[in-house]
Length: 450
Ligand code: UD1
Ligand code: CA
Image (cartoon, rainbow, N blue to C red; front, side, top):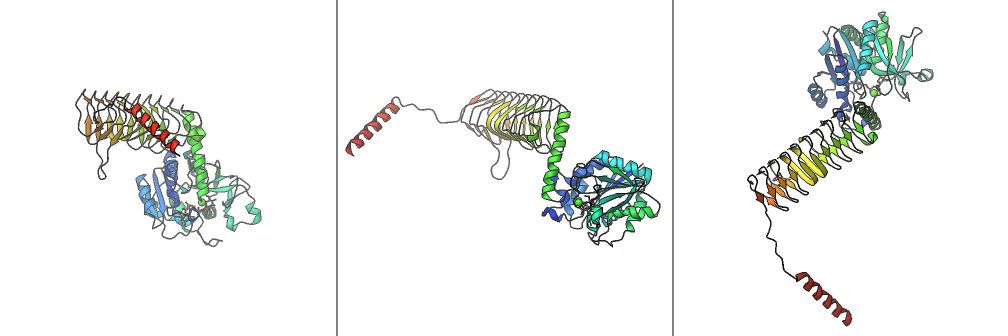
């Protein structure tokens, strides 16, 4: 059976106190909306429509980038009206539809698939859960047969109804998308908030003899996100989920609670991660690599058996090949470090290639930026760059070159040459001892006088 998805994202999210629409706030490096889209895709949903407000160009751009379609809710008249707005795109869709709040960063495919399967059996289905604190969630009232009686919004609920623990998660499925849009168009807004409530679609369906089933989800999976505090809470839960996933896949972590991951971090089995390592988006680490404490990686690749850190920084475009060593206070940006090369301390390598087996001494800097443009540094295989070398790009240091420590290299160096660029060393014999004697004598003279 074909399945479509609608994501409600037109709400202001005023409690976030942010100029950024709520669904674009990130959890594990991906906007919340992206997590919902991914969960839908995993549940076999082939067409996804994101409902946004007229001013939310950013939401639409992001939705498009993730392969979703867009619908606009002209005025924020409530969740029922938002879902109905997707009719402009899905009006002719022949299949089931799942509607999901856009503010559920922890949403997962199995919860959605279960809801759709139940709707495909019963006609309509809602997801319910028991949060630790039921707060202002809509309350789910169950009938004698275990079907949904109705959902009452917190603001409309009586004292008695507010005591109900079972809450509406914000995920709804209909077996027939066209029927769903018919029902949604019949909603009324005669309630405490003067809004068209999506949870009340079940009441319209019931009039046609369709009783809604209830599937129950885990409270963390369906947590809604309305404030900065809840965003931080979602991040905490997501980090735990990601850590558990990587540990289960065979990644070693000494202190997983201190490691921060992104939604797309790829760590192969037998990668070792030390304490306090941060993975920004777009990182892949191959088997046997060791990422030591306090390292920060973003849009970088690390090869088999490489040693990174402690205190290393891999920035976008860093490609670290197998068995490379990148040590403490070494920063690599947009550079390929070829097999077995070493930069063990205090170095910046940007816009460069470092050939296989090369050795980069402490304090080596690629001077890649002239204030306007970036330039390339090419370091050959087996080159030995002495400590405190400045490589002023564009410049090529060929294979096998030795660069003397403290050199500033501004011109290309030929294969297997020694290059030294610094003033000749000068020695004045006995100068130091003469100097000390003169100084001591002068001091003794002064002391006598006073
Ligand atoms: C909603 C449910 C509530 C449920 C809770 C779960 C309604 C009326 N209530 O409440 O039963 O327990 O979710 O988290 O649906 N949105 C629009 N257009 C609008 C209004 C909202 O697109 O006009 C979007 C928001 O961007 C958001 C989602 O719909 O992603 C839910 O809206 P929100 O205001 O957060 O609903 P809740 O009050 O949390
Ligand atoms: Ca909400």
